Image (tube, rainbow, N blue to C red; front, side):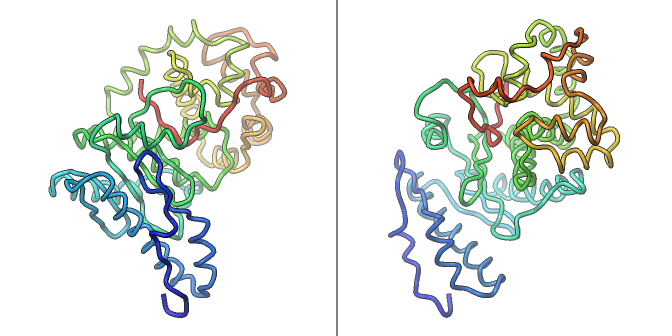
Length: 322
């Protein structure tokens, strides 16, 4: 970039399980020497492209990096399928921004990046970098990684299976600027995913979960839902957490103007309870009890002090399909 010393990208790479990890904090320091926002945006995009070229070398010669105006795709897909995926990413970004009117924010720098691994083994080797060293975690078919240069990752399959992952994870990307509780973040993502790519099959699966919800949730385990812990369970709790979040958001979003005010104020620290009382005039515990046809008690409401004993972790970047 004019006015700056060259950034030798290879000197700022670390490797994890054979995959390159660029030290993006060092990129930001280098970019701070540029005064023009346009120049900074162009340099950031060049860094993304350079990092992905190194990633391509790690994945193998069958992988290609392809681009469109707003997206980058690293995969071994055939040319026609890759072009369709890039086109879908561009259309989906616009649809997500439209559906989340008043909430979505498209980052000013960089393109949407999707890395599609050929197999689950490679996928999990890479995403394990973003998990704690110990613990059990739910399976996933895609993930939005919001650290450094945010990007989507998925496993190669037919385009129809990747599309819901893109819609879901792109929703997370457009909401990343808000300190949302995990249940609200995932509830929005699932509803947007279903609206864009879900279809009638998703609705039928959701209706079939009704009795399982009633048998699973209680005053104790609901605190895992409010804290976000239940979304990472390795039993049915993960699937039921996503669906319960979907149900609550669908109920609240019927009045979009009021719901927008709630979302903009909602904070993960109290699961959005204060914002819900101020904007929606409801107690979150009472809402859950009504949906589950349970008798309400104060134990169903978010209780942050009780979360301190949980091995909590922010899983807002992870999408898990049951």
